[in-house]
Image (tube, rainbow, N blue to C red; front, side):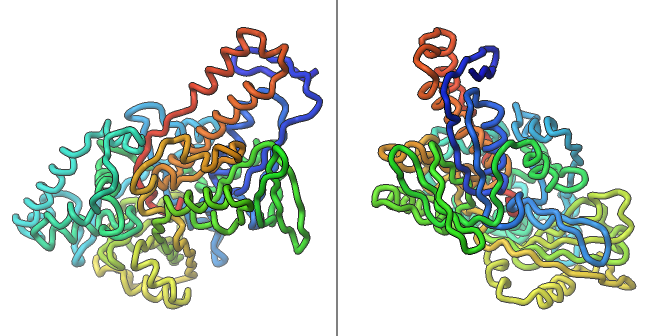
Length: 501
């Protein structure tokens, strides 16, 4: 007889077989779900994780250049710190895994070949009228959402109304063109879309995230990809890399996953299935059966607001910009407004220079048609004169494309209940769940919220439904099952990831 603890309660389980859970997707959502399940579920179970590619980690990617043994962030560039308001599950998870963090900062906007770090710079370079317009917009944004409201802004029963207006309606109130360009440059790469294609509330959140009173930024020392790597090392599961899931369908009281590996078709039945795919990949899987197919199509359509990124990263023989620019990143008025990262600042021992351009929205989508060489050339041409790129040598350029990889209106225009977000078809397929950042806020914080919500739900289901009758007759076990159901973590983050999450 297996004996496993749940919290302070020890439950004896006399089942002869372990319950099975299939997780589709080896990115942050799948790994976080598996790790949380492993910690929370107190009955025997086994996990199988399917990943279509040959690597885990998804949009968290920290590759190395060929020309020098130095790394850079090609996917999610930073993490968001909400610990100044309340418990921050992602920051706690990173600490639990023993990963060191490094703060990131960059208040500077480079526009018209001038650097703007404060209101005095705006007044001196753009004039009092522009500075006054920026102050008015900032005051209006703060009046609409306090830091505490910002923290809870993705609660479907929270403070923001349905997305009846776009963020363009708020920006259109800025009468001074220089002030509007400054604000759009500052936030375009966080938004990952155009103001007319996202909601007023979501745009507001992405503007306010630049204020340290609302949020702080950090990265993982040694590379953000250390997070999925550490999670994978701690997860006890059957990892099936290079296994593309072709379809999911009901099979008796189970769900059947059909996957393809090197031309070979495999079928596996599971008690529960978690679809932990980016929204852009949801429809790469067929959902067989009329009811499930319709439900998953409705789920896809609810969140079908694609946003786009392109990352161009250049390796130089030295960090020539340090004489004038010393932040972790800057906002640059090129490509409709982009973020320019000093990737070499992540490693104090790095003696070469690495700059990373994060192009977003329409510019990223349109320039995706360019070749890598063309994109590298455009990035070089975009460097402002103030950064003085003379007398330096380009060693290597890399391009990573994340078209459609994030969501322009996470949660959808009309938010639904958190349960329905994660269980698209509860009648005939109550054992199929979805996990994704697009359900909350297009951030790694949001995908962890989603993963923990589903893991808590599954833990309650397994405890309540699958424990032996004699065990459930125990008052403590009944109370525990009820408590697990009540204790599903409530998500709290609501802003866009500053790079593909």
